[in-house]
Every structure is written in C-alpha cells, then in structure tokens.
Length: 253
Ligand code: MG
Ligand code: MG
Image (cartoon, rainbow, N blue to C red; front, side, top):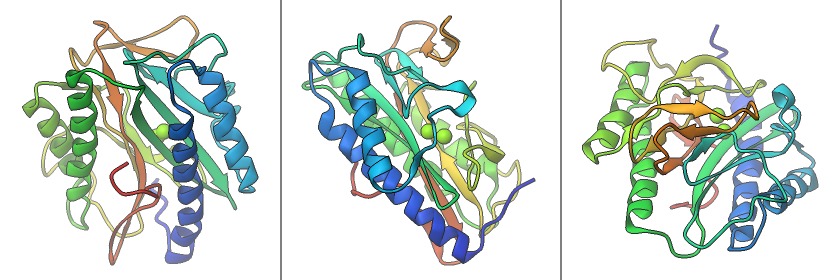
C-alpha cells in the first residue's frame, strides 16, 4: 500500500531531507586521501545527532553504522571501517539517512577522492544525469515505468549499465515503503504517479555489466566484473505544485 503524504507531512519530510543532505556535505568535506571510512561515518553521525535527528541506518536490519560507504567496484552497503582508507583516485559512494520528528530522508552521492580518471568522472556525471532524467518523468498521470525507462535509457546510451537487483523505493515514516522504484522499466507501465507520493530515486550505474554480488560480510555489494560503480540518490516529493527534491541542499552536488 502506498502512503500518500499531505502537505503537513511533506513539510515534516523537508526537515529530515535537509538534515540528510547537510550530512552529505559534511561527508564530502571529510573525503580526502588517507581518511578512513569510519571517520567519515563518525562525522555524519555527529552531524545528524547535533541536529536533534537520529541516524536512520544505524541498527537498520542490524547495520552497524550511520552511513553505507562503498569504494570503487563496491556498489552499495559498504560497512565503514577504521581499516578502509581512501586513496587518491578512488570514487566513494556515501549513502545516509536521518529520521526527524518521525520522518526519514535518504540520499547518496558519489564523491571523487583527489584526482580521478576520466572514465570515473564520466560515470559519476552520467549517474547524476540519469537521476534527473528520471525526475523529469515524475508528473501526475505518468507511470512508474516512465521513470525507470528514462534512467536506464540515458545510462545505456552512454555505454554503461543500470543495476537491476537493487532499486529505489517509497519513503516516509519508514525508510522503505511501497512502491519499489526500479531504475529500468517500460514506458507507460507500472502504477500511476500522483501528488503526495514521496520516493527515493537512486540509480546505481556500472561501467561494465549490471550483475552484482554480495560479499560474505552479508552487506557489501560489488560489481560482478570488478568494474567501477556510481550511485546518486535523493528523496523527492511529487506535489500538486510540482516536484520537490527534499535532500538537495546544494545545487550541482
Ligand atoms: Mg540511500
Ligand atoms: Mg534508498
């Protein structure tokens, strides 16, 4: 069942979204060669708690940290660790969430560590662009498949592939609500979009094949072929006045 939000609920989600977005700015400022993923996670946790919010990821399904931090061929769900040190040329995916007054924000960015390859830059750009291509289709009367098709078409046109095993989702008082929001689809298919929907749209894009595998730690997901992967996610709201990007606090990031 899809929980549509009224304007008061969307206003509450703006606060959770803003805190989540700001936590990612804090994370970006912490990214540099030599820093551990543990330190970045700690900075995120401290910021969220300083705002009077709760790190949504901490303890979610038993996850041990406030952010998923995944490097290079790791796609999602990387566990922060004192022994994972960022190196010049890495790309790091940071995915976090904040719960504030009962509502959740969920957002992810892929951040370069120092200077990265041209391919890595293009992958990050295409992944971000594919998110916005999906958002373009977020209009009352369109269907869920229109979003996924727009994302995947842009990715494939650029020679990359869209992860299929993991998808976006509805979001509200729970981090994961109905519906699933796949990053691929058939135009004109799927449920009809309407005002009051709040979704986490989150393309995960690989340089090589879309196949992924989960590591024995039970969390970390990597590309099957070892190719680079990028992730870009915002919590968005479809209102009668248009689309709100709830977790975007700085244009272009
Ligand atoms: Mg997320
Ligand atoms: Mg999500």
